[in-house]
Amino acid sequence: MIGQTWAALIVHRLTNDKDREVVERACGEIDRSASSFLPNLQPGEAAIIETDFPIPMTIQIEPPSGASRPGEKLMPCPKSSWTLGMPSSTAGSEIALAEIRDSFHRVGTIFSPVNSTLLKRLFSAIHQGMDSDVTLLCEKIINDERRRGHGNLAKELAAIVAAQKQAGKPMLPTQTLSQLPTSRRESAPLVQNIPHEKLRHHMVLPTDVEARFMRVEKEYAARERLANFGLRPRNRILLHGPPGCGKSLGAERLAWATGLSLQKVRFDTLLSSYFGETATNLRKIFDAATDRPIALFLDECDTIARVRGDRNDVGEMSRIVNMLLQLLEDFHGQGLVIAATNLDEALDPAIFRRFDEVLEVPKPGATETVRLLKLSFSTLATEPDFPWQEASVAMENRSCSEIVKVCQNAAKRSVLASRERVTWKDFEGAMAEQRRVA
Image 1: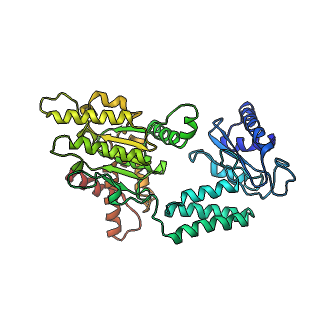
Image 2: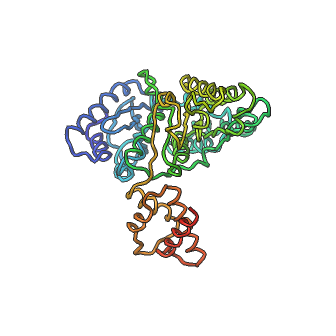
């Protein structure tokens, strides 16, 4: 047993829940899960516990150094190293972790018993290709092992990384043009690859819309756990709403949060005047998205998903829509398919049920507008009495992109005038200029 006292403190700190029954239920679940792992732990091994109550979190247990047998003395252990896996959005998590840091034995993230052999195999598999992000992660793990006193293991892991670097193997996630799906006739790339490190991800959304975005991200992160119960995560997402409200940004945010590179479909090369080539190109794109985990993004998807039966359309467009419906229906890749449109009323009715999540990205309300204004001015100070509410009213019914543009123009005015703070006059001038442009 891992001990009710410190388990209760962890649960209490992380949930801010003073309900004794809630804390006791959570601690009981942790204890029951731990008891099945501890008798089988060997020195240097660790076990994982996953729980969704009272919040989703994972807890790792391993025998403290100096334990005479597996599972012995799992008690509060001052100045022990530990980590805790939990949602980044959990309120007060950093404070809670800091308060517990020097009080308990290490708690962290694992799924099953982990030993040095498995860790070595993991490193070897990852380093069949080298990537800067993966390398940094590996170095972090190596440093962590050294800090725990596992010097020999740290040396072996470092040797694996060094050997792969010397072998000059290509970087795993890097996409070259030859690796991207290409059109048959011109061999032009059918998608534009946006690397993960270049993705934007800061969004200001209403609470209910933000919760739905987070649900998609959480399900993707827990896809293996869902698969154990025969469940699939939401991986086909349709974003719709007025222009300039963050649909493209939403696609980038989903790719960033799930750790995927974004591949944006290029309709200029996808569409062909030759009979049947457009459908062939579309299949190539989806085949590539099935072969490796990526976030495939069909921006302005109404281009190839309009209502069938329009008398002004040629028969080829109906065949393209049929092909898209079939590809979406049959998609079982490890990544995401994200589509976006401003014209949801123009889409074929059958397209909506092919998506697991249909998300409307609306114009910002008063609360979101104030948050967006402050975020847009975060790199440059505003005058102390800047009227945020008045600015929010002035931006009513504006799209997110319009609000950001006004803020950027106001900031430029301030910088060019050598002022250290953005003034209300800067903002008014930028608004007037935006109205003239509109």
